[in-house]
Amino acid sequence: ENTLHRLQGAVRVCKHESLKVFSDTLCSMGSGLVIRSGDAVEELLAVLAAVTTGRRCVVFNNRLEPWHRSRDQEVAEALRSARIEVEAFVGNVLYDPEELKPIERWQRWRARVRAEEAENRG
Image (cartoon, rainbow, N blue to C red):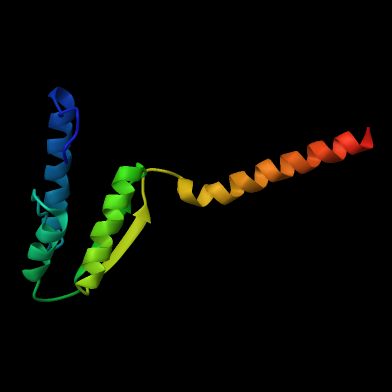
């Protein structure tokens, strides 16, 4: 992932160790961790082409930044058009901000109605 800030020091070591433990855990369950760089759709399709048994599915956590969301949606659509099952989940947050927007609109509307009722009562 291209970012403005490269991982350094303790953060880099922590990420490396976390990935190592995750890889070891996957191996103990008969799976493995694949790390690639390049075009996400091309790389995922290449990995999935090597899968000869079992379910071909890509599972990921939704990211919240708009530029990541649009990219994730593009990748998911491309995979689905290639007949790959895709599942996305809310990760690292209690509620998906997109799902909260209707509630926020309702709360603003309700606050406005209450203010108008109070004003009408005098």
